[in-house]
Length: 313
Length: 257
Image (tube, rainbow over all chains, first blue to last red; front, top):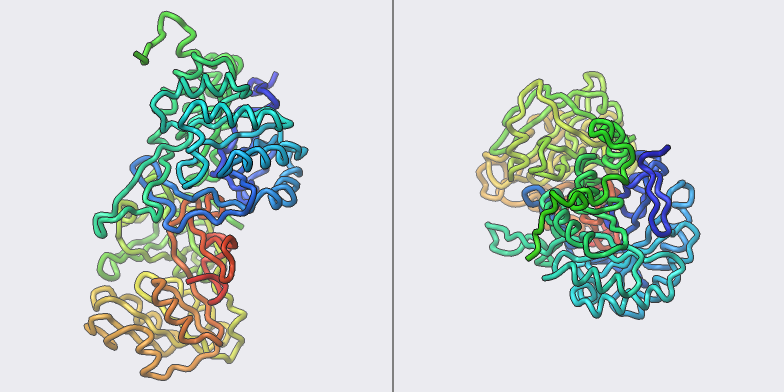
């Protein structure tokens, strides 16, 4: 029995660990460090219809326990991803989750339809939560009706299950999650980055050329855990959790909160081997805690009724 | 090949104002070849500071199994690094990036090495390797002030070396370009590392000569995955180069400075 194997809509994962979108490019860089086939899946960098350069530099700024980024969805565009990046990834035995973004509804739909037909794309991740672009991105992810409508339209054209990536930059993430579930999403991925800013004490100006950026890394983990804890109790579709994961212990925390798989983001930048390390560490941790299969951990924090904590008013 | 190792601090000393020379021992040194490549250093095991620090290689010594990096204490990360004592270990990823092309300067040719401030260190290994190949090396090193000057004698061991300081407290008063002009320094190929305005000035002054520049940019991953350190390519809105993995050394004209 593979005690790490997880079944999700469109995805038969040999383990529930995958690099998060935007933190792994299209895999080429990390393939120099290890065989990407060890990964549960790969969430590739957000793809838009046309190539995008993104924002001016500086694009990253460090914060205690985290980092701000304002890359701005730089990517080579749909055609190049279909012609070069996805075929290159076919050499690995790993399902691809294609993150898609756009400035208009039409762009999202067009990219979704085309990329969902690629043979190794097993699911889409609808990016309605990028905080670093002026048009699109988060504009679709902060109003439930707008997010739901986009989800419905993308579902109509997609050849594979659709996961929607939620933004934490909302007042009520449960309302957002429910609206997206009702619109037909097959799963949720959460959380994207939190909008933040750093100001240079010498110049008095924001450090990032874009002014604001998205906060990621261990600093955001408690927020991700709380949001997954809330959302997983309110929806019946699975959640791929992300936000500051660095270790196998962090992975279990996300499962206990209600995630069915997890993505590792910023930690790849700190340690290129973090994903295979976590995968290797998980069995011993399960043994230590007397857990047979990792799926037993999903939602444990709220499923054991006596210990349920009601953090929502 | 890129490796990952906890390297051991062999020595660390203050060589100029807030400027440290750190020598590390480890098997990773055997992978280090090109001057201008860098290592990505995690200064603390904790999540704060979280990211690695890109530091260029100043000297590679395969025989001793040691490499030297020179850095200026600027923030929290370099302050922690400055506290490292001999015997301590440092988490190092590298060597990363593409260094200075040695083949651009054939034996017998004349190379001008121009460094500005904390951009000076990678030119030291370059001077060493070029000299070994029979290239005549002339170095021009620019610093803000006398207290910031380092490695003047070390460079002089490889050939004619000029120092400029902004405030005139040491060497020629002014900028590196003033020295090149005043001394009418001739060269077949120019290699430079330093602040962008300096690199831009050099590229503009010698538009028809082979000029290679090493860029510095804030980095995330250091391996080309995060797209933090991109720069534009002339004549295109969307084409780009990544400083960490396509560079940090580029031929002038290859990227927008």
